[in-house]
Image 1 (cartoon, rainbow, N blue to C red):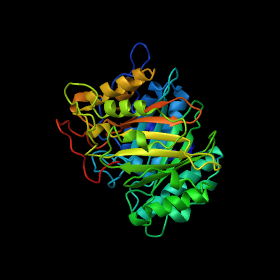
Image 2: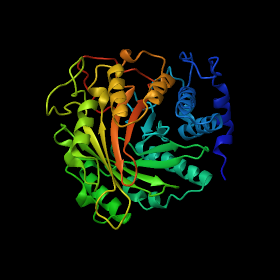
Image 3: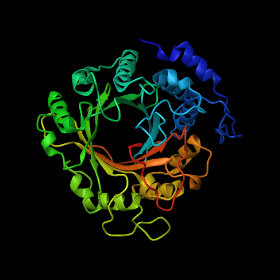
Length: 406
């Protein structure tokens, strides 16, 4: 089995991370930014603290920090006082790292990290090649198959790709040091006008011949995602963009049998978008659309015997509809408690990522999502920005940056 974690460069980077200050309880204290810190040092320190917030062991935390450094490759050693290596679409400040916590009732949240392995490559084509090499190295290390990805390589990795990304890699960090693996691909790789045809062909090659016809109307497909490796039911997922989406329209996006009730989706939407109650930052109205950054829906396909998706997720870009992260956290806490989930790990996770006051920025919590998968409990997910390069300032009426982030 390939020992990526023993790579000398990775071990040196991990050893260079300053030891953490601890409280008498042994918990990690808040930390100041370090002069001369690298992107890898910044992200590794964050992931170690986030693993603690998610209840993972110290050994698992160190192993996942090593994996993160390995996947980032040479850009991990890039000093943070230099600008981002290129305009990554993964986050508003172009950090090639994003975290998320997925909550279910009566359980520890699941920590996930999303990475762009090819960040800093000389071209989008090279970005994709680096990403594929990273995925295949992990497949050798952990013994999983990349067959489903291999079957789609010509669709998503043409010689002269277009679009905002080539390949993103998501790791679901589980106890034991071996994560679940997902890849995110670009339907617009052969041109935005080919996005629909690319997604239709990709679903067909994976055996979901009738799946595309079950998707709701949208502006365009944004991502095509695949589960690789040890998944109970590996999914193919299609992410769709819905400009000017409203609470009234959001329930109509569900195509999953037994999915969330219309009232659940409407209530989630209004809370996440700040339309649920009077107070600073609220956008009251029965049908106020997401007129800044659009909402996203995700449709997960598992069985090839059914044309209908088995999973549905609604993503609300809370950072564009809240004055600051304090408001975004309040909404997240409301949603978690409403669904019987403990918000304490999210509060701890935000402190693990940054020492700044929540009121001093808008973007630490990027999205809030409500997810349903057949046979599993409802999930609420909070997406957390690394903010390695920039803190997006708070504003009374924040405006989305055109072309930056999702």
